Image: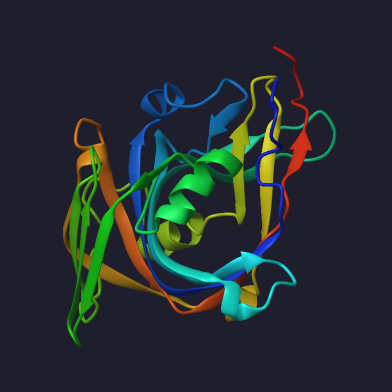
Length: 245
């Protein structure tokens, strides 16, 4: 029995710096990592990972003043998934397998109040006019990426898509965080963001190494940088699955 309702508060904050890396992976590989109530979002014969590296600024419960907010770096490894509830339409979003952050309060509280699997980490981001370097040091989660913002990325020869434009459109994730509790119910955090304010540009990942993905069959599809945007992570809603297993 779940004692603590996960994601019990509506939280607000600003994503002040953000890079997203989308990878394709075989559908069977993704299914092995998911609860049976979730299905991977697929295109042709591929499922997809979404890795975010972002700075969350002034994260706090809604109605709390900005000065009490916490600013930290968050790295998360997610799979694109869909959940079909007992009532209503299918919901698409992201299923978190691992999070790293550089704030001990967020890490400790996050593992009590969410299913995002937080780990303490050292996260450094250095940015120049031409490039950005990201380095993460964490048990079983070391990573390094170098991004060139001045080069338009080519379509990967192994891409599941016919064009960069098609890949970019398909891989813009639906704003829902999805987990599944011990009773098979989905705990879904619906996210409010102003879609008119969502501005992203494709960039070239000249290098990207993630130890969490080192033994997985993945291929980089796209990397993009997102402009600062305000977010509201709503208190989670519980949904019964369409079929009780």
